[in-house]
Structures are given as structure tokens and as C-alpha cells.
Length: 482
Ligand code: FAD
Image (cartoon, rainbow, N blue to C red; front, side, top):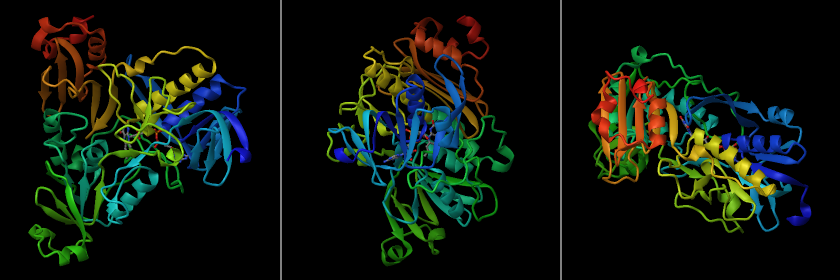
């Protein structure tokens, strides 16, 4: 591959999602006279707009899909290469693209994202939702559907079951409560009535700006969608009425049958109403079998690492991500990784954990760019403070949701206590205390507590003396700790 190198760049970044774009912007602006390249499979890139620092650690921003020329116009030293990376030779420091070109690099950052972990490969009745294309395919098929089965309990499943109308949804979750990735059973209980409320009446205006996409990208491996991915598209099925969701708890998919397989499998005893002919049947581990028009597999993601592995010696984490250290460096020399493609394998702050989210893709991309720069300049660099405290703002079921620190008491075992305040239909506040100190919080609704709680967590203040008063709604906690 060495002899065919078309050009060698100081920095090459792979992936036009949030992580790759943030990384390449950081490098292009810090080194205006060095050659920088962004290699990406799709014609569009993801750009962060309206960035707003909500508090010391919480940030909000919109993401827009833009033609990549926007970046080239902004950074004259940046070249965009529109092709997927097919292979990587770390020994000779070069990447080969699907269109047969070879580019050299001094430093490389892999930001190739992740793809849905599908329940089964190549089953036309099982869909994953990841990019604009797959979201539109989902919308198209939903328009003719009377019943779908959604499998998974993360953010995508949560948003999906809430947004779908005029189609019955069977929601299979492996946990005892919905939304287990993000919160506990108490919060789930708070949110469940929203699923039952009539969607047409309950839909309150959404304050957060929409995520908009342009025409569907023709590439097969576009960037992951993000918050509000469903807002630009109507999610309506073929039935009358509004939302109809039934949750099947503590179960996984045992088997997926086609109609033909289902008919020959005489042992199956479907629910009476599923006995008609559906294109696909889902047997759950709780013994229930449901016929449906199609299945949505929302059971997490797998990092896109395959093109980079062959012939190299990358160390991979259990979740399949490229292991990176506290300088976002992989186990291969001069190769960094950021965003969904990587697994943060440094010793984490006790208040932080990796979750494959937009905010972390931006933070990691930016920090990886700074680490690559520091390496080139032989300058020291400390782990950025954004990795000190996990913080995430989002919306579920039209409620503002703020997650801080060990919001689900992750890794704390029994060494913690919880304080909860809940006003039905309005707010749910949960605080996680360990050794008398606040280590995490879940805030659902317009609680206005995020900044104060963030400070209390970061200050490591001993709150034992305050006890349950901490959540007393009659006390203005902000004044209290001023
Ligand atoms: P991506 O955005 O996936 O970008 C990867 C890029 O790499 C793409 O441009 C792709 O074309 C390119 N690429 C891949 N392979 C190659 C290759 N071999 N060669 C060249 N280029 C390649 N996060 C939130 O914080 N909040 C949410 O509400 C939320 N909702 C979501 C809803 C959906 C439906 C999905 C799918 C994800 C959601 N996420 C959400 C997660 C969030 O979108 C991702 O964590 C984030 O986009 C990851 O950014 P990234 O840059 O690492 O990867």
C-alpha cells in the first residue's frame, strides 16, 4: 500500500459524525498551515450548532446535517475525502478507501461511530434505526402497519414507543421497568402514565429545537441520528386512534418466525388475536408469541471497527469498541479514537461513565483533537474536566430529563441511599447519596435544580445534616446553599 500513497496528511480523521467533525475542526483551526483530511462515507457531515453551556458541566446543542463543503470553505487546509475507509495499515501509517485510493497520515483519529445491534441479521422483517435512511424506511413501513413489536429498553426504544401513533406497539423490555438504561423503576413509574395518555391531547409543545436533515443520504453507513430524530417525520401507522402500547416486562426474544415457519411450527400457541396472518411472529422468553408487521430492534449498538482491525493489533473492549487511554489513544501508535467507536478505558472519575451519546461524542472528538495536537507539539495535557462528572440533558415523553453523575447508583452496590420527591405528572427528583455526599441525580420535569445539584456533587459537600430536607419543596435549595 505504501507505494500508492496519493498524499500524506499531518492529520487524518475518519467519520463525519459529531466526534469526527469536532475533532477535525479542532485540528484544522489549531494548525492552519498543516494538511488535514476528513474521510467520511457519506456526502453530509454533522455540525454542532447553537451550542449552549447550561451550567458548569451541562451543555445543550443542536445538530445539523450539512454538506461537507461547508467545512472546506471554513478551513482552507482541510480536504474532505468522500469514501469509506476499507483498510488501515498502522505499520506504514496509511488508510485505503473503498474507491481504491491510499492516503498517508502522521496522526489518525477513528470516529466511525456505531451501528444498531440487530436481533438477527438480514431478516427483512427486523429493522434497526440509526441514520436518516433507516428512520425513513421505518416511517414508510409504519404507514402500512397495524402492529409492531419494539425490542429494547434504551433511549431509542423509549422515544419510539412514545412517538408512534395509529399502530399498536408491543414493547418487549428485558428489565422490570421501562427505560432501565436511563433511570430506575420509580422514574419509570412516573413516566408510564404518559404512555397511556392520549397522544393528540397530551402532546405539549417541544421547546428543544428540532434536528433536521436534508435529503436522505445515499450512503449505507451514515451518521447516527440524535435527539429529536423523529420530529421531522410523522410516525403514523395504518390504524385509527392514537397511541396503544403494551409493555411485556422481563423478557427477551426467543425466536422470530416468518408466517410460513410459524404455520409449520404447530407447537406455537399465539394469542388468539395474533392467529391471523402476520408477516412475522415474535416468540418471547415469557412464553408469549405476537404476530406483527415488523420488529424494531433497539437493543444497543456495536462500534464500527471492522475496516480498521485486519492486519493491526488493536486492543478491543468487551463492548467491541477500540480501547482508548486518557489521551484518547488506542493501542496502536499514532492512532486515536473518539465517539461511539471507542471505549473509554482509563480509570474513570468516580462520578463519570461512558454512554454512547451525542454530548460525549462531541466532548471526546474535541479532546482527541487537543491530545493529537499536544502530542505533535510535545506538550503535556490533562484529562479534560468534562470527564469528571457525567451529565446529560435530554427529553423523554416530552419531559426534560437531566442525569448527573451516578444517577442510577451505578457501581455503588448497597453503599448508597436514595432521596425521592415526586409530583405526579409534573416532576420526579431523585438524589443518590453515598457516605453522606451527593453522587448522582435524576431530574425529570422543569425542576430547576440542575445547577445546584451539579455544584453539590462537584463540591463533595457532606450533606448528612440536611437529611430529607434536601428535597423539601418548601425550601429554596438554591438560596440555602448560596
Ligand atoms: P456517528 O454519528 O455514527 O458518525 C460516524 C461517522 O463515521 C459517519 O459519518 C459514518 O458515515 C462514518 N463512517 C463509518 N464507517 C466509516 C468508514 N469505514 N470510513 C469512513 N467513514 C465511516 N444521543 C443523545 O445524546 N441523545 C439522543 O437523544 C440520542 N438519540 C439517538 C437516536 C437514534 C435513533 C440513534 C441511532 C442514536 C441516538 N443517540 C442519541 C446517539 C448519538 O446519535 C451517537 O452517540 C452519536 O451520534 C455518536 O457520534 P459519532 O460521531 O461517534 O458517530
